[in-house]
Image 1 (cartoon, helix red, strand yellow):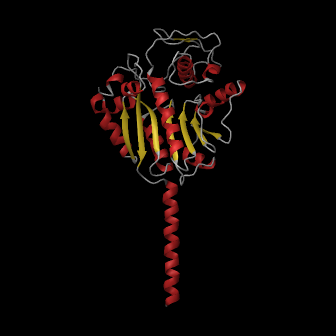
Image 2 (cartoon, rainbow, N blue to C red):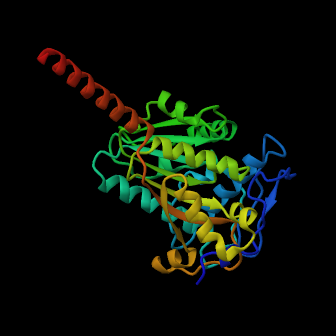
Image 3 (cartoon, rainbow, N blue to C red):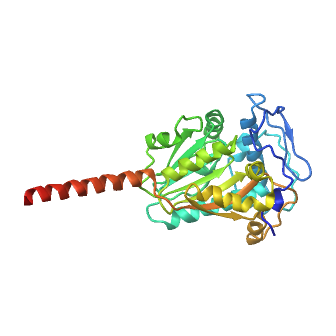
Length: 318
């Protein structure tokens, strides 16, 4: 089955393609969570999108056989939230499960991998709910106002980062995210893994900036995975059958070899049925083929030092 058939008729909104007016309540029907989330900041599309995703995790957590358990999603939704659940799995929750598993499998099997970079909507609870190895440093790149609101809620329910681990926030609004990461202690000479889910993407150019940041920061051989808004491919090419090739070209131009994954295949591998209907994201997993800027700088300095030592030895011989 073509991996791109599923989003052929998905809404081309992403999150911020155009101004959207949101009410202070949202109700899901036809098997979705019925939720009324009270917003402090009215008409905030970033906050509303993050709340929508949190409500899906809340619903999944309370299913009889959940794909994952998010014990903190409930702190973002109204206390009187009602659930009307169907048996099939939601695309978003399947993507969440895939990303969770890939992150933990990778950090537990690659020696020295202690840096995890999450590009999120600000309400991602992975730093709290996943069992990270000792000394893991989690960098959370997300909208500052949503992150601050989420941090207050999480603190209120006693959420804690696993012992001996650290979580650091990097505002998405930073003028230079790569420099901000370095200032927080990120080291491009050490292994890392990057995951993107829910990060607000306004344009293709803004996503290319993200790719450039990951490419310049991640060591050769590191992984970048997650969900990419499908409308980027639709806007660029207009023909869904070429979306895979477009993805491969886009990522390769930035130094990545990418695999586009089918939600249907992920569902089958987990023994789940996929919910019907389109979806607005593309699931992907990519490997960094280039060397990070820090690696290049280290080697440049080493080469310079070797040449200088060679010049000194040649002078002494004369």
